[in-house]
Length: 500
Ligand SMILES: Cc1cc2nc3c(=O)[nH]c(=O)nc-3n(C[C@H](O)[C@H](O)[C@H](O)COP(=O)(O)O)c2cc1C
Image (cartoon, rainbow, N blue to C red):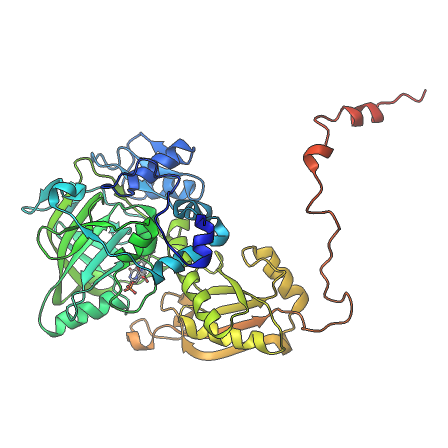
């Protein structure tokens, strides 16, 4: 069974990934392996000129987003290079997973279903702890932390995997959270109400700090695994293990019991302090608007560990790396959720124009009238971020915006096929949900949103050809290579004939 079949059938045995030819029994796939693969295939741009950490670095990375990863050798005059944009294309992420794009969601879902326990290694086998700082920590002196967007309130860590243990059960959780570095050893973190938030609230209720590790510079599979939508007490590092096809080597932090990927570049260890809040923001977020300055939880840093020559990873907010990292695990979860009630759902896509969060396109093999509306309602319940759903037939490619628009243009009637639900919970980061609210509206009033569903499917039964898509027999099979001449000499000769 090849990797694609394994993904399709949901089985995960050890397999070879094309960019991991050097992997041995004791090593793991690393960020460096992936960057070397991108470099070899013309997808890594090295910027050797010194660049400013404030805006300039992000501006260059943004210009390269989706075409090449950016590797800065001298950011902010620091000796630590910065990389950005190494997962900024859907095809690259599929390649990292060893599947075709069409197999991406199945592969990810199979890893979520069959996690692989991590393997604890000694410090001597953990490159992320080659260098250890525990005294007089100054993050600004140690690390090149960029300021990204115009109105951001200073430098932010945007690509840190935040790892913590559930204080009730001891099971780890991984998420990415934006972190503003506002002191030499002090940072403010945005915790939206999910697992890390729950851990912090539990610890706080007991008057305890919550140990956390912020892991910067891991391979694309571990980055992707961090975004899995799972029930609480599922350690996403075990999903990373499944995606690697081998247990992920992890090391114990030097100042806490948290386990971190041993082959990471940099780890910041710390504690989220109980009952302490400090201002964070504004910050340019994924919807391409700013989040306001608000009081947030605070991390006090206890140690920084890193490789001898570390690489710092930054994600430019709202660019493709940010959007795709969230989109693919969500699509996998949404597809599984919809298929539980509607097995005839074939594929889903979170569109880029909908910031890979708000607009869901669903491909569905409709057999009875009305079913598409049930699919729409099911999708609204799957994740509060979903604001607009378009359901199309199986002859429409949900990965192509022009095809979706064509289906709406030709199969949808607003008085008949539109579903609107008022006053539901939506994304608090969608600025249109705040219209009419005071600036200081409490969090329980934020993000109230209408939902819109469009049934753009054709009727199950229709008069001959009314909804038959025009196609030309042979359009997909003609052999242009054999038919088209190497040059236009026959054309030139024809138009230059002298008829006297
Ligand atoms: C680049 C990036 C930045 C993110 N920033 C935040 C953030 O600041 N706060 C937050 O709660 N979630 C943020 N997320 C989303 C969470 O990491 C994601 O929902 C994760 O799956 C939550 O994990 P959990 O459900 O295990 O807690 C971010 C995601 C990405 C890809």
